[in-house]
Image 1: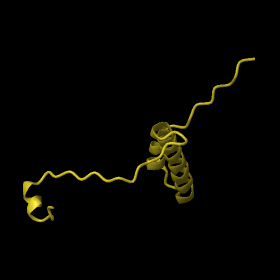
Image 2 (image 1 turned 60 degrees about the horizontal axis):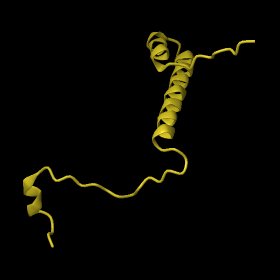
Image 3 (image 1 turned 30 degrees about the horizontal axis):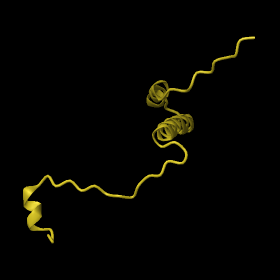
Length: 76
């Protein structure tokens, strides 16, 4: 027996349905489905970028693009 492949929902297929829907209740259901699909995609990307056990540092990086900013900062 061959396993059944289930296709993951694609936001690009859901969004046009939302544009065309005129019934507010159906539109809300489509928007909730769209949000769930987008959130699932974001969670998958986060899991790939930051696998379990990965620590996200709390350091900040400041970039000095403006030469005149040195006049406003304390320099030791």
